[in-house]
Length: 432
Image (tube, rainbow, N blue to C red; front, side, top):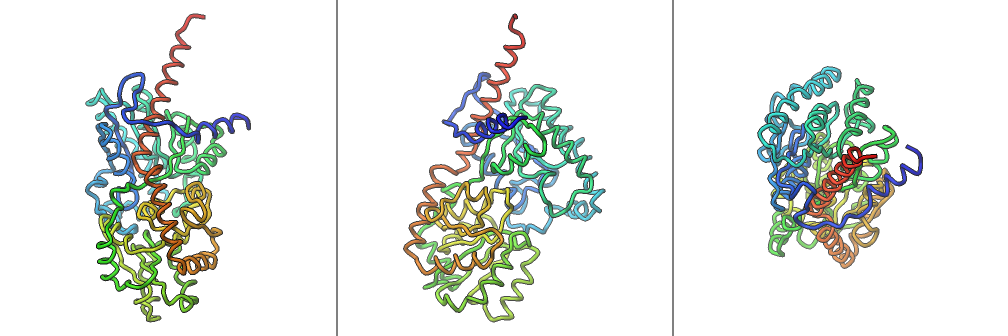
């Protein structure tokens, strides 16, 4: 694809869509969608899957979810640690040497295709398949194309990004990904930088849209009584509370943030931290806090059910995201904003696409933990600004970034795919 073609592709992918309920395609109203995924359906993965599926159902679309066996996002433990497996056999597979682990991922294509084919046979009214893309997964896309059913891939992962487990069969993963990205009916990326990397790696890809994550306002609405109750429970009355919500893992860097903050904590006697979550770095961080006698200033709740999250967010006045993927769209950022909790976040491109500096949150140079600490200390001293920015953040989520907005854009995208296919078929069959 030449430079002009790439720019046109980018403009089409990011152009706002006018959306409305009951989107109609040339074939009629979308009545049924299959959501296929190969994740464990826990934690943030489950939040995203349920967000999309439930929003579609509220628009009158029947949605069925085909999950990795034993990983139904509606039954997997919602409070599960990000380092814990949903089922014992998943833990065994996860401990395989990398080559064997990737071969197991590749082999799962057969299982997935068999289950998807059976579903398609039983549901001739299927409008399209929506698949959360996974590495080495391509057979369901091939099957959908063979049956003439549109398949839209939601891209959250890629062989082209740095991974916790470095790929062994990277060339094979890239080849499958290239074929899949080119042969899907459409692609949904969580950020424009992620889409641009896919274009750079594969040359050309299927039509794509950019859809950041979201949060539902009705799930992140609380009363003053709920705020008071949570603050009393954790001894937060009279303090400005900076919160964190998410996995305690090296790449989110909450432990590094705390280490940098502790040296300056005496500058802000009004400030307390409320850190919610669990993971690999949690035990060491808790020991660090306890050894320094800071448990009354830095509170670690441990793992909590997702249903408890809004109550904990209610106790916060601001929130910090010390780090994030440079191509990802962090769900917790949207949940902070939905709860009128202004975030302080690294200035990665996907975050710059969401946060308006000084209006819906604040950013600091990614990787600069001292700058993150300075931002938190600075704004913790101005409660009026915290409330104003938090209110604007909630308004933004209300009007632009609830899960309903995501699926209306998805349905409009599907309609454009069907219309394009119909036009191409007409051009092929029309007389010269």
